Length: 421
Length: 143
Image: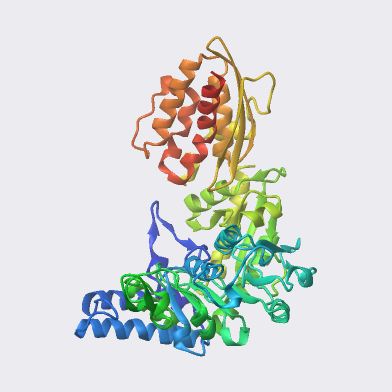
């Protein structure tokens, strides 16, 4: 039974007091989520009693650390429905996972035709991407002479699939789009794009940084080729991310970073590489962070992702209604609570109709009411350009948020309008 | 109510009624500065004659702090000498980068002293400095 009051007790920070006696209203989980005791304690226990290097330390502590690190991989594989634990590659974040895949293309070491890219080839992304799913593909295009193309976004904040058949064509090598937008909240429908990608023989990647923390995600059901997500947005620590990829593709890809533990054998002039996933985990990995992410996944599984999703859907509906009643507030993204998550970005005018800059909105919310939101372009500048605005204020909800907190936000926004009236 | 101490009445007044806003001719130099973390931007022109600042004109978008800072800059710099105004820019920069630990020299800063509270908010310091850095740049280019 989902009980938000009980859940809140697991997160120590939620009951702290901010300077000036303000209580904390944390509406910035899309930026980074808070951590429950279960994660904090697991990491602390590991550091205190078990810590050593993984893979290469042949003693009791090494064995315990390795077991805990590899157990985390099992837990995460099960969480996202990966057919094999070896398909879970630990990275430092979702950006690294996206870069890892982008660098597999157009790499002379890559012999597989699917990863050969040159002039005339095309890469497809969308206008609603986070910079981490734009810039690595710009690099790829610049490196290889390939052409970068993108889906446009409709006024309502949905992907415009009107030119799907033109955008994704026989020249397309990969389509990489966001599963849930970090600005609009939009949850993109994967199947029509995937069907077209399959038709033309292109690969498909999903940036699932904002979906895996908030809803049940099964990579096998999705049917795509690669999925990236990150630990710190799903009640886990920062410094750990995940790339899931089909085994057969990961095997065909060249290594990304070279270094310790990613090798099979090394000579002075050449090397052979370890099997996946270790081929992609050069150097000492973020050990305790991976174990912490395993604990985070256990925590979320214990609550149930379907319940997390249902709680957030109810909250999102409540928030869309509450914000919709504020004159001068415009939601950037779907206003209907369908195929969208609990990320709500908006612009705000005062009662005379002048824009109030998101920096000013966020500052008053924080300093007067202890409400943490994110302000700015949220690492999605092209999307803001598309809507003709420099920045938005973003409230992003998670399993520990309440309707009281949304009421506080609405009150805070009315106050902001008075200050800048 | 910590924030409202940052949003001094004078800052809000300049924000709501910006002084000298709009780009004007003639000018000796024009610069365009942006704050990449928030997208605030300003285009600023200066007209200088024999070491005297005849006009500072500007157009931009941004938060109340960045807009009010440009307005205050216009008031302080216009009509003063280049040398005096650069002294004010230095003092303002020192105040903004002082993390709230620096005592402002009100004799030098005039109305700009109202921004003292901003120095405690590292994320907002760049907003306050945007137009002032643009001005410094423009003056150098006008020489």
